[in-house]
Picture 1 (cartoon, helix red, strand yellow):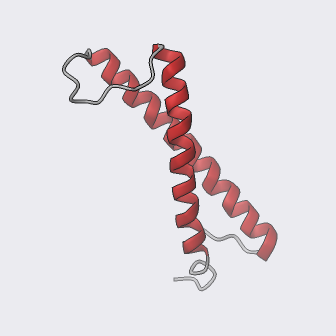
Picture 2 (cartoon, one colour):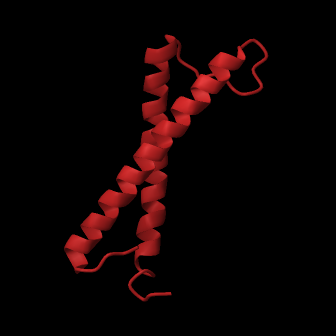
Length: 88
């Protein structure tokens, strides 16, 4: 393992937690707009249709992926700016 990657691991883990929190909040707001209700359906919610369940899962997955990539990329760019080396 490259020595420059070791110090970045805790930063990367912290960024993962932050991105999860941001993505969760963004998904909750997006679901309110899409469905007009507060809580997204759980996969085991008997009263919800397949369409609702799969739409919620697709929106959640897309938001989580975009937020995670954005936060990780921003962290890597910041580390490169501060240290001169790319962490990944």
